[in-house]
Amino acid sequence: MTLAIDGGTPLRSRPFTPWPPKPTAEQRSALLDVLDSGAWGSTAGTRVQDFAAQFAERHEARYGIPVSNGTLGLLAALRAVGVRRDDEVIIPPFTFVATASSVLLAGAVPVFADVDPETMMLDPEAVAACVTDRTKAVVPVHLAGGAADIDAIRAAIPDRVRIVEDAAQAHGAALRGRTIGAIGDIGSFSFQSSKNMTAGEGGMLVTNDEDCYRAAWSAANVGRAPGGGWYEHPAVGWNLRLTEFQAALLTDQLGRLDELNARRDHGARVLAKRLADEVEGIRVLLDPDGTTTHARHLALLRFDPAAFGGVDKGRLAALAGAEGIPLSSGYPLLHKDAAIRAEAARIVDTECPVAESAGPLTVWLPQTVLLSAEEDLADVVAVFVKIQRALT
Ligand SMILES: *Cc1c(COP(=O)(O)O)cnc(C)c1O
Image 1 (cartoon, rainbow, N blue to C red):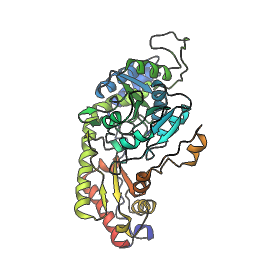
Image 2 (image 1 turned 60 degrees about the vertical axis):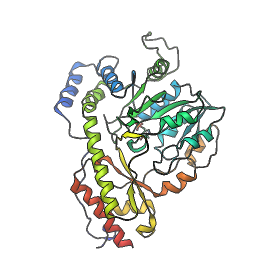
Image 3 (image 1 turned 90 degrees about the vertical axis):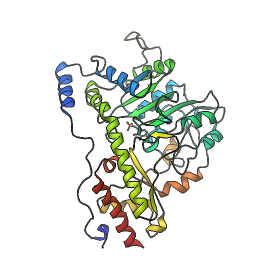
Image 4 (image 1 turned 180 degrees about the vertical axis):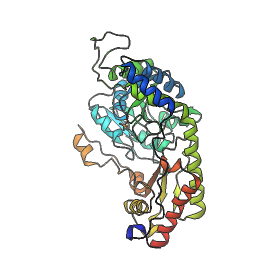
Protein backbone atom coordinates (compact mmCIF):
# COMPACT_ATOMS: atom_id res chain seq x y z
CA MET A 1 0.00 0.00 0.00
CA THR A 2 1.48 3.35 -1.04
CA LEU A 3 1.69 5.81 1.84
CA ALA A 4 -0.53 8.90 1.50
CA ILE A 5 2.54 11.11 1.82
CA ASP A 6 3.85 9.47 -1.40
CA GLY A 7 0.56 9.96 -3.26
CA GLY A 8 -1.38 6.91 -2.01
CA THR A 9 -4.95 7.04 -0.72
CA PRO A 10 -5.13 8.28 2.90
CA LEU A 11 -6.36 5.52 5.20
CA ARG A 12 -8.82 7.91 6.78
CA SER A 13 -10.57 11.02 5.49
CA ARG A 14 -13.21 11.63 8.19
CA PRO A 15 -12.45 14.11 10.99
CA PHE A 16 -12.31 13.01 14.64
CA THR A 17 -14.70 14.40 17.29
CA PRO A 18 -14.82 18.20 16.94
CA TRP A 19 -13.63 20.38 19.84
CA PRO A 20 -15.13 22.39 21.47
CA PRO A 21 -18.26 20.20 21.55
CA LYS A 22 -21.58 21.42 20.12
CA PRO A 23 -22.94 24.32 22.21
CA THR A 24 -25.74 23.39 24.61
CA ALA A 25 -29.06 25.21 24.97
CA GLU A 26 -27.86 26.36 28.43
CA GLN A 27 -24.74 27.97 26.95
CA ARG A 28 -26.76 29.69 24.23
CA SER A 29 -29.28 31.18 26.65
CA ALA A 30 -26.61 32.13 29.22
CA LEU A 31 -24.63 33.96 26.52
CA LEU A 32 -27.71 35.87 25.40
CA ASP A 33 -28.56 36.73 29.02
CA VAL A 34 -25.11 38.26 29.47
CA LEU A 35 -25.45 40.13 26.17
CA ASP A 36 -28.85 41.59 27.07
CA SER A 37 -27.90 42.38 30.67
CA GLY A 38 -25.11 44.76 29.66
CA ALA A 39 -23.07 43.31 32.53
CA TRP A 40 -20.31 42.01 30.27
CA GLY A 41 -17.38 42.31 32.63
CA SER A 42 -16.87 40.55 35.95
CA THR A 43 -16.81 43.84 37.85
CA ALA A 44 -20.45 44.29 36.75
CA GLY A 45 -21.88 40.74 36.80
CA THR A 46 -21.82 37.74 39.13
CA ARG A 47 -21.29 34.79 36.75
CA VAL A 48 -17.49 34.83 36.87
CA GLN A 49 -17.53 34.95 40.66
CA ASP A 50 -20.08 32.10 40.89
CA PHE A 51 -18.14 30.00 38.40
CA ALA A 52 -14.88 30.58 40.30
CA ALA A 53 -16.52 29.31 43.49
CA GLN A 54 -17.87 26.20 41.73
CA PHE A 55 -14.58 25.49 39.98
CA ALA A 56 -12.64 25.84 43.24
CA GLU A 57 -15.07 23.51 45.02
CA ARG A 58 -14.71 20.87 42.27
CA HIS A 59 -10.93 21.12 42.76
CA GLU A 60 -11.14 20.77 46.56
CA ALA A 61 -9.89 24.33 47.03
CA ARG A 62 -11.21 27.17 49.22
CA TYR A 63 -10.49 29.91 46.69
CA GLY A 64 -10.77 30.33 42.91
CA ILE A 65 -9.22 33.34 41.16
CA PRO A 66 -10.39 33.87 37.55
CA VAL A 67 -7.68 34.99 35.11
CA SER A 68 -7.53 35.82 31.41
CA ASN A 69 -5.41 32.82 30.40
CA GLY A 70 -3.09 30.12 31.70
CA THR A 71 0.11 32.01 30.89
CA LEU A 72 -0.84 35.08 32.92
CA GLY A 73 -2.41 32.82 35.55
CA LEU A 74 1.03 31.30 36.09
CA LEU A 75 2.49 34.80 36.34
CA ALA A 76 -0.07 35.77 39.03
CA ALA A 77 0.51 32.46 40.86
CA LEU A 78 4.30 32.92 40.83
CA ARG A 79 3.89 36.48 42.12
CA ALA A 80 1.48 35.22 44.80
CA VAL A 81 4.06 32.81 46.24
CA GLY A 82 6.60 35.63 46.29
CA VAL A 83 8.61 35.07 43.11
CA ARG A 84 10.42 38.28 42.18
CA ARG A 85 13.31 39.41 39.96
CA ASP A 86 16.29 37.06 39.92
CA ASP A 87 14.63 34.31 41.99
CA GLU A 88 15.05 30.79 40.61
CA VAL A 89 12.03 28.72 39.59
CA ILE A 90 12.44 25.01 38.80
CA ILE A 91 10.43 23.74 35.81
CA PRO A 92 10.51 20.74 33.45
CA PRO A 93 12.04 21.06 29.95
CA PHE A 94 9.23 19.05 28.30
CA THR A 95 6.20 21.34 28.55
CA PHE A 96 4.36 24.09 26.70
CA VAL A 97 6.55 27.20 26.38
CA ALA A 98 4.26 29.22 28.72
CA THR A 99 5.57 27.32 31.77
CA ALA A 100 8.92 29.01 31.05
CA SER A 101 7.75 32.31 29.58
CA SER A 102 5.61 33.07 32.67
CA VAL A 103 8.74 32.65 34.83
CA LEU A 104 10.56 35.11 32.57
CA LEU A 105 7.62 37.52 32.72
CA ALA A 106 7.99 37.52 36.53
CA GLY A 107 11.64 38.55 35.99
CA ALA A 108 12.77 35.23 37.46
CA VAL A 109 15.23 32.61 36.23
CA PRO A 110 13.92 29.29 34.86
CA VAL A 111 15.98 26.30 36.05
CA PHE A 112 15.25 23.08 34.19
CA ALA A 113 15.13 19.82 36.14
CA ASP A 114 15.08 16.46 34.38
CA VAL A 115 11.98 14.31 33.94
CA ASP A 116 10.89 10.73 34.54
CA PRO A 117 11.04 8.82 31.23
CA GLU A 118 7.67 7.09 31.75
CA THR A 119 5.70 10.29 32.44
CA MET A 120 7.89 13.11 31.03
CA MET A 121 7.02 14.98 34.26
CA LEU A 122 9.49 16.35 36.85
CA ASP A 123 11.66 13.75 38.57
CA PRO A 124 11.63 14.66 42.31
CA GLU A 125 15.31 13.70 42.74
CA ALA A 126 16.32 15.90 39.82
CA VAL A 127 14.29 18.76 41.34
CA ALA A 128 16.07 18.34 44.68
CA ALA A 129 19.44 18.53 42.91
CA CYS A 130 18.48 21.89 41.34
CA VAL A 131 17.54 23.62 44.61
CA THR A 132 19.81 26.52 45.64
CA ASP A 133 19.50 29.38 48.15
CA ARG A 134 17.84 31.39 45.41
CA THR A 135 15.15 28.81 44.59
CA LYS A 136 11.72 30.32 45.33
CA ALA A 137 9.35 27.88 43.64
CA VAL A 138 8.90 24.67 41.65
CA VAL A 139 6.30 24.39 38.87
CA PRO A 140 5.31 20.76 38.33
CA VAL A 141 3.27 20.37 35.13
CA HIS A 142 0.36 17.92 35.16
CA LEU A 143 1.33 16.83 31.66
CA ALA A 144 -1.28 15.44 29.28
CA GLY A 145 -3.84 15.38 32.09
CA GLY A 146 -1.92 13.01 34.38
CA ALA A 147 -1.01 14.03 37.94
CA ALA A 148 2.54 15.19 38.62
CA ASP A 149 3.65 13.66 41.92
CA ILE A 150 3.30 16.74 44.13
CA ASP A 151 3.70 14.58 47.26
CA ALA A 152 7.11 13.27 46.17
CA ILE A 153 8.25 16.73 45.05
CA ARG A 154 7.14 18.28 48.36
CA ALA A 155 9.12 15.62 50.25
CA ALA A 156 12.23 16.28 48.11
CA ILE A 157 12.52 20.06 48.62
CA PRO A 158 12.98 22.42 51.60
CA ASP A 159 9.78 23.76 53.23
CA ARG A 160 10.59 27.33 52.16
CA VAL A 161 10.34 26.39 48.45
CA ARG A 162 6.78 26.90 47.17
CA ILE A 163 4.87 24.74 44.69
CA VAL A 164 2.86 26.25 41.81
CA GLU A 165 0.97 23.55 39.89
CA ASP A 166 0.68 24.04 36.13
CA ALA A 167 -2.68 22.32 35.70
CA ALA A 168 -3.48 23.79 32.26
CA GLN A 169 -4.05 20.28 30.86
CA ALA A 170 -5.53 18.54 33.88
CA HIS A 171 -9.01 19.80 34.89
CA GLY A 172 -10.44 17.34 37.40
CA ALA A 173 -7.38 15.04 37.58
CA ALA A 174 -6.49 13.46 40.93
CA LEU A 175 -3.33 12.36 42.74
CA ARG A 176 -3.89 9.52 45.24
CA GLY A 177 -7.56 10.46 45.42
CA ARG A 178 -7.04 14.20 45.90
CA THR A 179 -7.99 16.59 43.09
CA ILE A 180 -4.94 18.40 41.74
CA GLY A 181 -4.55 22.20 41.61
CA ALA A 182 -4.37 23.15 45.27
CA ILE A 183 -2.32 20.22 46.61
CA GLY A 184 0.70 22.53 46.30
CA ASP A 185 0.47 26.22 47.28
CA ILE A 186 -1.53 27.33 44.23
CA GLY A 187 -2.44 25.92 40.81
CA SER A 188 -3.18 27.37 37.39
CA PHE A 189 -5.72 26.08 34.83
CA SER A 190 -6.27 27.18 31.23
CA PHE A 191 -9.47 27.52 29.19
CA GLN A 192 -7.66 28.10 25.88
CA SER A 193 -9.37 26.59 22.80
CA SER A 194 -7.65 23.19 22.87
CA LYS A 195 -8.01 22.55 26.61
CA ASN A 196 -10.45 20.13 28.29
CA MET A 197 -12.65 23.04 29.37
CA THR A 198 -12.66 26.08 27.11
CA ALA A 199 -14.15 29.51 26.54
CA GLY A 200 -11.82 30.20 23.60
CA GLU A 201 -9.43 31.72 26.15
CA GLY A 202 -9.38 32.09 29.93
CA GLY A 203 -7.93 30.60 33.08
CA MET A 204 -8.43 29.94 36.79
CA LEU A 205 -6.19 29.76 39.84
CA VAL A 206 -7.09 27.64 42.86
CA THR A 207 -5.58 27.68 46.34
CA ASN A 208 -6.33 26.81 49.96
CA ASP A 209 -4.00 29.45 51.34
CA GLU A 210 -5.61 32.77 52.22
CA ASP A 211 -2.42 34.82 51.71
CA CYS A 212 -1.90 33.22 48.30
CA TYR A 213 -5.50 33.97 47.41
CA ARG A 214 -5.24 37.63 48.39
CA ALA A 215 -1.95 38.11 46.54
CA ALA A 216 -3.11 36.28 43.39
CA TRP A 217 -6.44 38.13 43.36
CA SER A 218 -4.56 41.40 43.71
CA ALA A 219 -2.16 40.49 40.88
CA ALA A 220 -5.19 39.81 38.62
CA ASN A 221 -7.10 42.93 39.75
CA VAL A 222 -4.69 45.83 39.19
CA GLY A 223 -3.14 45.56 42.64
CA ARG A 224 -6.37 46.13 44.56
CA ALA A 225 -6.96 44.24 47.80
CA PRO A 226 -10.04 41.95 47.98
CA GLY A 227 -12.75 44.20 49.46
CA GLY A 228 -10.52 47.29 49.12
CA GLY A 229 -11.18 50.59 47.35
CA TRP A 230 -11.37 51.02 43.56
CA TYR A 231 -8.42 53.42 43.38
CA GLU A 232 -6.45 51.82 46.19
CA HIS A 233 -3.57 49.74 44.85
CA PRO A 234 -1.46 48.49 47.76
CA ALA A 235 0.43 46.14 45.40
CA VAL A 236 1.34 46.23 41.71
CA GLY A 237 -1.02 44.11 39.66
CA TRP A 238 -2.59 43.91 36.23
CA ASN A 239 -6.03 43.47 34.72
CA LEU A 240 -6.13 39.71 34.15
CA ARG A 241 -9.90 39.30 34.41
CA LEU A 242 -12.24 36.84 32.72
CA THR A 243 -15.47 38.14 31.11
CA GLU A 244 -19.05 37.18 31.95
CA PHE A 245 -19.38 35.73 28.43
CA GLN A 246 -16.58 33.28 29.20
CA ALA A 247 -18.19 32.27 32.50
CA ALA A 248 -21.47 31.69 30.62
CA LEU A 249 -19.67 29.16 28.40
CA LEU A 250 -17.71 27.50 31.21
CA THR A 251 -20.33 26.99 33.93
CA ASP A 252 -22.18 24.32 32.00
CA GLN A 253 -18.92 22.57 30.99
CA LEU A 254 -17.95 22.10 34.61
CA GLY A 255 -21.05 19.93 34.99
CA ARG A 256 -19.93 17.72 32.08
CA LEU A 257 -16.23 17.51 33.03
CA ASP A 258 -16.35 14.15 34.80
CA GLU A 259 -18.34 12.52 32.01
CA LEU A 260 -15.90 13.78 29.34
CA ASN A 261 -12.86 12.80 31.44
CA ALA A 262 -14.32 9.28 31.66
CA ARG A 263 -14.89 9.17 27.89
CA ARG A 264 -11.33 10.33 27.17
CA ASP A 265 -10.02 7.78 29.66
CA HIS A 266 -11.94 4.97 27.98
CA GLY A 267 -10.57 6.02 24.59
CA ALA A 268 -7.00 6.06 25.93
CA ARG A 269 -7.37 2.58 27.45
CA VAL A 270 -8.86 1.10 24.28
CA LEU A 271 -6.06 2.63 22.24
CA ALA A 272 -3.37 1.43 24.67
CA LYS A 273 -4.68 -2.13 24.57
CA ARG A 274 -5.01 -2.27 20.81
CA LEU A 275 -1.54 -0.84 20.22
CA ALA A 276 -0.07 -3.32 22.73
CA ASP A 277 -1.83 -6.22 20.99
CA GLU A 278 -1.40 -5.18 17.36
CA VAL A 279 1.65 -2.96 16.78
CA GLU A 280 5.30 -3.46 17.78
CA GLY A 281 7.39 -0.47 18.77
CA ILE A 282 4.75 2.07 19.84
CA ARG A 283 2.84 2.28 23.13
CA VAL A 284 0.71 4.66 25.19
CA LEU A 285 2.38 6.07 28.35
CA LEU A 286 -0.82 5.31 30.23
CA ASP A 287 -0.86 5.68 34.02
CA PRO A 288 1.66 7.83 35.93
CA ASP A 289 2.33 6.51 39.48
CA GLY A 290 -0.17 8.03 41.89
CA THR A 291 -2.61 9.28 39.23
CA THR A 292 -6.06 8.11 40.34
CA THR A 293 -8.06 10.26 37.90
CA HIS A 294 -6.45 11.11 34.55
CA ALA A 295 -7.89 14.04 32.57
CA ARG A 296 -6.49 12.57 29.29
CA HIS A 297 -5.90 15.88 27.56
CA LEU A 298 -3.39 14.05 25.35
CA ALA A 299 -2.34 10.44 24.86
CA LEU A 300 1.47 10.43 25.09
CA LEU A 301 2.98 7.75 22.85
CA ARG A 302 6.50 6.33 23.03
CA PHE A 303 7.88 4.91 19.80
CA ASP A 304 10.98 2.99 18.83
CA PRO A 305 12.37 4.49 15.61
CA ALA A 306 13.88 1.10 14.66
CA ALA A 307 10.35 -0.33 14.39
CA PHE A 308 9.48 2.41 11.88
CA GLY A 309 12.50 2.32 9.55
CA GLY A 310 14.49 4.83 11.63
CA VAL A 311 12.12 7.81 11.22
CA ASP A 312 12.31 10.76 13.62
CA LYS A 313 9.20 12.06 15.40
CA GLY A 314 8.63 14.90 12.94
CA ARG A 315 8.57 12.46 10.03
CA LEU A 316 6.32 10.03 11.91
CA ALA A 317 3.84 12.85 12.61
CA ALA A 318 3.92 13.93 8.96
CA LEU A 319 3.34 10.35 7.75
CA ALA A 320 0.41 9.85 10.16
CA GLY A 321 -0.99 13.30 9.34
CA ALA A 322 -1.07 12.47 5.63
CA GLU A 323 -3.06 9.31 6.49
CA GLY A 324 -5.65 11.43 8.37
CA ILE A 325 -4.42 11.00 11.97
CA PRO A 326 -3.63 14.22 13.92
CA LEU A 327 -0.44 12.85 15.49
CA SER A 328 1.62 15.65 17.06
CA SER A 329 5.40 15.56 17.17
CA GLY A 330 5.07 17.18 20.60
CA TYR A 331 7.14 19.72 22.45
CA PRO A 332 10.64 20.75 21.55
CA LEU A 333 12.80 20.72 24.71
CA LEU A 334 13.07 24.11 26.41
CA HIS A 335 16.30 23.84 28.43
CA LYS A 336 18.51 24.86 25.51
CA ASP A 337 15.96 27.11 23.80
CA ALA A 338 17.73 30.17 22.37
CA ALA A 339 14.85 32.62 22.87
CA ILE A 340 14.43 31.65 26.53
CA ARG A 341 18.16 31.94 27.17
CA ALA A 342 18.26 35.36 25.49
CA GLU A 343 15.45 36.63 27.73
CA ALA A 344 16.69 35.23 31.07
CA ALA A 345 18.43 37.68 33.39
CA ARG A 346 20.83 34.90 34.31
CA ILE A 347 21.39 31.41 32.91
CA VAL A 348 21.56 28.37 35.17
CA ASP A 349 22.72 25.43 33.09
CA THR A 350 21.52 22.01 34.15
CA GLU A 351 21.72 18.56 32.59
CA CYS A 352 18.52 16.88 31.39
CA PRO A 353 19.74 13.61 29.84
CA VAL A 354 16.43 11.77 30.27
CA ALA A 355 14.45 14.53 28.56
CA GLU A 356 17.05 14.56 25.78
CA SER A 357 16.81 10.84 25.15
CA ALA A 358 13.04 10.36 25.71
CA GLY A 359 11.75 13.68 24.27
CA PRO A 360 12.57 12.79 20.64
CA LEU A 361 10.74 9.45 21.07
CA THR A 362 7.57 10.99 22.54
CA VAL A 363 4.63 12.02 20.36
CA TRP A 364 0.93 12.43 21.15
CA LEU A 365 -2.64 12.23 20.01
CA PRO A 366 -5.05 15.00 21.07
CA GLN A 367 -8.27 14.61 23.05
CA THR A 368 -10.32 14.81 19.83
CA VAL A 369 -9.05 11.30 19.03
CA LEU A 370 -9.65 10.00 22.58
CA LEU A 371 -13.26 11.26 22.51
CA SER A 372 -13.97 9.33 19.28
CA ALA A 373 -15.62 5.95 18.82
CA GLU A 374 -13.79 2.61 18.93
CA GLU A 375 -13.88 2.27 15.13
CA ASP A 376 -12.09 5.64 14.89
CA LEU A 377 -9.42 4.40 17.30
CA ALA A 378 -9.09 1.31 15.12
CA ASP A 379 -8.10 3.63 12.24
CA VAL A 380 -5.28 5.02 14.39
CA VAL A 381 -3.94 1.51 14.94
CA ALA A 382 -4.36 0.68 11.23
CA VAL A 383 -2.36 3.76 10.25
CA PHE A 384 0.59 2.73 12.45
CA VAL A 385 0.43 -0.77 10.92
CA LYS A 386 0.35 0.71 7.41
CA ILE A 387 3.31 3.03 8.11
CA GLN A 388 5.30 0.24 9.72
CA ARG A 389 4.74 -2.17 6.81
CA ALA A 390 5.75 0.47 4.28
CA LEU A 391 8.96 1.40 6.12
CA THR A 392 10.28 -1.96 7.33
C1 LIG B 1 -1.97 25.74 27.54
C2 LIG B 1 -0.89 25.69 28.54
C3 LIG B 1 -0.45 26.84 29.22
C4 LIG B 1 -0.89 28.23 28.87
O1 LIG B 1 -2.24 28.45 28.90
P1 LIG B 1 -2.86 29.61 27.96
O2 LIG B 1 -4.26 29.71 28.45
O3 LIG B 1 -2.76 29.11 26.55
O4 LIG B 1 -2.08 30.84 28.18
C5 LIG B 1 0.51 26.69 30.21
N1 LIG B 1 1.03 25.50 30.50
C6 LIG B 1 0.66 24.38 29.87
C7 LIG B 1 1.26 23.07 30.28
C8 LIG B 1 -0.30 24.43 28.85
O5 LIG B 1 -0.65 23.31 28.21
